Amino acid sequence: MGSDIINRRTLLTGTALLGLGGLLTACGQQAADEATASVPSTAVPSETATAAASEAASESATPSPVITRGYSGGSKAPDGEYRKADGYGPAQNVPEPRKEPAQYPETEEGIDHMMQDWLAAHNYAIQTGDCAPVFRYVENTSKEYPFYEYIDDLYKRGGWVVDGLDAYRAEGDLIYDNQQKFYRMKVRRFWTTVMYVDSDGEITKRANTNKDDDLFNYFYKYSDGYWKIIGSGKGDAPENNEQ
Image (cartoon, rainbow, N blue to C red; front, side):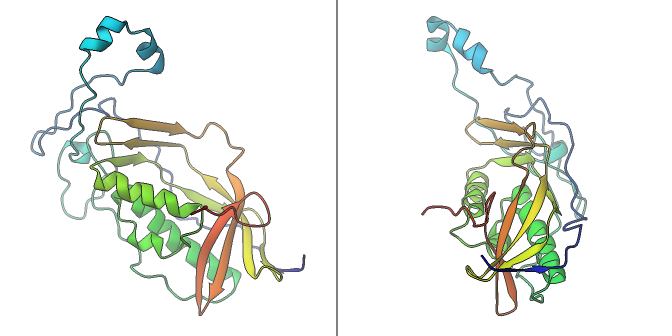
């Protein structure tokens, strides 16, 4: 399979920082009104505790609490003050990304600039639920697209995301596939923890304890001055979303 290699640059997105903040034990509880924003400290039941519960207890058990989305930090942040998400509510005053993708040259510098713009839109979507900007950077057949649909729906249901921000670093050359007419580049994803808080009381927590899947290829197409992500995967072709 013929291919051309564009000279490598080591840093793809040097400006993105991972969120390492602690997760409040109040997550999963109902946030109070915006003035006081007090959260009851009730632990989320573990699978072991659920399995050990008696039949009689489960009959009288109260349903999972409905979570009311409040303000992160327990109060509304002043205009312009960024405040990360926590157990009280989503991030506040998140800097907005570009509204529309910019035109960049068909070079490694061009893909570098596009990926920084995409990452800003990606992390903005995770923190706000506004996926309109990031949808413009990805094909709807890619594996990435359903994730953004999930984020969009989660926020519309009244949920939000705590942590979950990403950073990326180039780990290989930008290669053009002459036969399939797309580019690929090996990248490494950096992330630590993420928690998805749903309004129905369901909380999903993940930690990056297995680094095996952090190294993979992104695949791109270039058309009329614009770069676009068409998929990702371990091999030499994108693993697309089956729709």
